[in-house]
Length: 241
Image (cartoon, rainbow, N blue to C red):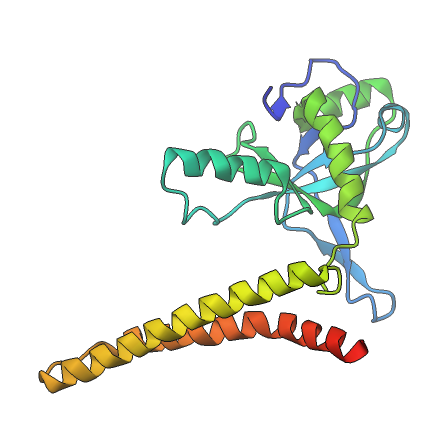
């Protein structure tokens, strides 16, 4: 089932409806006299209010919808495309982004921001609301993805994340460290080999491009930097026993 589908003509406003041409505002400079309104760079939004609220109230809550950019440089094969689309669909690595795909009448691909909530006022008189929806509503989430939206919103706010290293078990931490050391050793061997090639080239009156050595050195430095916090955590545990 597609993520979005046409909204039935005459259907009431409900959760998952996608609206266009509505200015969204946020507060900027809130430390200066309470702040002032700032126009968000979006003209698309999605209603996330409960159906009973969306049908009866004059104010509903909406998510900002933005055009997605970049992120496809590594997508080359058929398998890559499938994995890429599944990854963005499920929000892997980006829990605040809810992928929607293409929008009717708009070019590109779009996503709703689960960290950009806005209040919008809509007409309450039946005739005016019907006119508003016929003009502003361009699609709605399918039922399956509306339920997924609810789960994703909950997950985006309920998960505190695990950015520290203390959650690793001792054996898992040792595994990570040993793997890191192995990759550093391999990178150091590769660096020595590149330096030897450089010396050989110079003996032959030739020159190895500087970036070859620089790249090899950078790989070693980057790996050491990645491993350092894990080794520090291992040391912290050792000191505490």
